[in-house]
Image 1 (cartoon, rainbow, N blue to C red):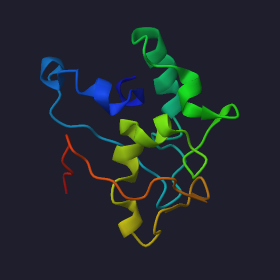
Image 2 (cartoon, rainbow, N blue to C red):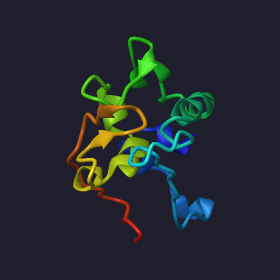
Image 3 (cartoon, rainbow, N blue to C red):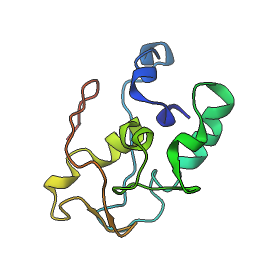
Image 4 (cartoon, one colour):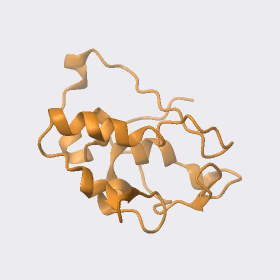
Length: 119
C-alpha cells in the first residue's frame, strides 16, 4: 500500500516511526521474472485506497489497465514503485526495454531524491 502513493505524500510518512531502514523491490523487467512487484502493483493500490483517501485507482490506469510505457499516466510514472523499479534501468543492456512487459518504459531518466540505492 505504501508504494502506490505519489512521492509528495510519501514524504509525509515517517519511515522511522515504522522502523523501516530498507525497502526491497523485486523487479523482473530485465530477466523476464513474472512475479515482480510491478505485476503486483495494483494490489498495493487496492489496499492503499482503503487506507489513504488521496489514492485514486483511476489515476494509475489508462483505458482500464496499468501501463509503464509512453502511455502510462503521470501518476504511475511518478509513483515510488515505478521509480524504485526502473531507477537506472536505462543503463542496463536492456536500455529501458522491459522484457517482462515487452515494452519500452515511459520515463527513463530520473533521480531518486529521498532514497539511496544499495549495491
